[in-house]
Amino acid sequence: MAELVIPSAQQLIDGEWAAARDAGELDIADPATGQTIQTVACAGRADVDDAVQAARRAFPGWAATSASERGRLLRRWSELIGEHVEDLARFEARDVGKPLSGGRMNIFIAQGIIEYFAGAADKLTGVTLPTRTPDYLGYTLQEPYGVCAVIIPWNVPAVLTAANVAPALAAGNTVVLKPSEVAPLAPFALAELARRAGFPPGVLNVLAGVGADAGAALTSHPGVNHISFVGSTTTGRAIMRAAADNLVPVKLELGGKSPNVLFADADLDVAIPAIVGSITENAGQNCYAGSRLLVEASIRDEVVERVAESMRAVRIGPWDADLDMGPLVNEAQYRRVLGFLESAPAEGARLVTGGGPAQRADGGWFVQPSLFDGVDPRSRLSREEVFGPVLAVQEFSGARQAVEMMNDTDFGLLACIWTSDVSRALRLAQEVRSGQVSVNQFADAGVIGFPFNMQRDSGFSRGGGYAAMREYTQEKAVAVRLLDRSPVE
Image 1 (cartoon, helix red, strand yellow):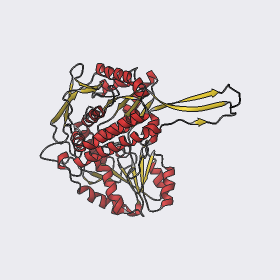
Image 2: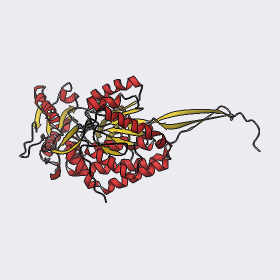
Image 3: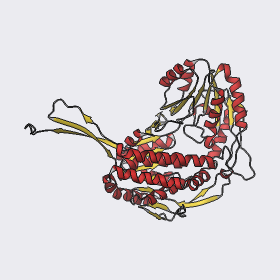
Image 4: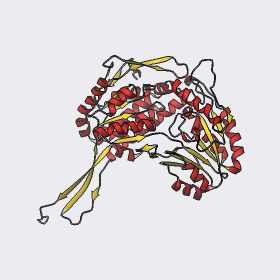
C-alpha cells in the first residue's frame, strides 16, 4: 500500500501537484502547540483560474461518463479511504486539534458518505409527466450544472469534503474545492486518494488560500456554475452578493444555535452525557453544537449540577493523547471564545463551572468546558454562535413556553427534544422552526441518509441523503408532440 503523503507547498490542479503560481505558502499549525506541522501552497487568483479552467475542460467528458462508472470511481475512492483510515485520522485530528478518536470517527463518516453516493450515482432520475391525450409525452431530466465551487471551513474538513464533493461528482459535475487555509490537510489527502482511484484530471481540484483572495476569486469567477459554501452567516451573505453578478445558484450551510430541550420525564442518564458531548465534541466547534440547554423548571437544579459534574470530568489534551476534548483551532478562535466567557457574567449569567483557559505545560489554545446558568435570552451568549465549549442554561415551564424559547433565535439548524412523551415530542417537532429535529438523541445518529437541512439564518440547502445530489443538478423539462397518428402494426 502506497504511503499517503501530501507534497509540501503544493496544490492539486488538473490531476497534478504543483506549487502556487506566485510561490506563496501557508504554514499549518498544530493547535495544541502552535508549531508548524506542514506547509501547503497558498493559492492566488491565477491558481483559482487554473483550477476553474481545468474543471471546465474536464466537465464535458465527466458529464458524458455513465452514472455507473462515476459510481464505480466513487466506490473505489471509498475503498482507498478505508485502507488509509489511520493516516487520514492523523491529518484530521492534528490539523484541527481534536482527539485522534474524533479524527478517526470523521474519516469513517466521510467514507460512509462517499460510499452512499457511489450507490446513488445511477439512481438519479427524472419523472414522466401526465398528459392530456396520448399524443404527447412529457418528462424531466436532472442534469449537472458544470463547475461547482465548494468552500468549506476548518472544523470537520474530511466530513464536509465528502458531503459536498461526493454528491457533486456523482451527479456529473466537476469540482474546485477550497478548504480553509487553517485546516486543509485532510481535504488534500482525500483528493490524493481520489486521484489514485482513477478520477480523470480536472474532475476534482483542491487549493488552499485566504478567503479574501482565493475564496473571493472563486466565488466571483465567471467560469463557475454553482457555489456551495459552509461557514458563517456573515460570509454567506457576502458570497450571495458575489454570486449575484454571475447569476450563479448558491447552496449555503451556515451557523446554528441549537437547543437541547429537556423535559422532566426525560431519561437523564441518557440525556446528560449526550448534552455535554454535544457542546464539547470538537471543543464545541460545530455548527450544530447544542449550545442552548432549555430545562423544565422542576429538574433545573439537578440538571445543572449533573451537567457541571460531567463537564468537570472532561479530559483535555492534544490530539495524540486521544482524550475527550482538544484545543480550539487557533488563537483567533481562542480569543473569540474567551470574549464570550468574559462578557457573560456582565450580562447576568451565573458561571457554574469553567469560565477560562485550560492551562497546559505544552501551551496551545485550550479552554475549559464552561456552563452558565440563568442566561438572559437577549444576551450575546444566548443569541450568537460561540463556536466553543460553552453551554447556556435557561428554564421553561410547560411545552408552550419550550416551543417559544426554542424558536427565539435567528438560526434554524437543529433542535433536540428529550422526553418520554412521544405525542409531545411529535407536536414539538412540528412547531419548532428548524431544518432538523432529533428526539432522545443528539443529531442524526443511527439514520442512514438523514437530510442535513437548515432554515432561516442557518442557510438553505439539502445536505445528506439522496436529496443532496439534487442540489447539484438542474431540472430540464421536455415536452414532445407525437405527430405520427398511424396505428401501431
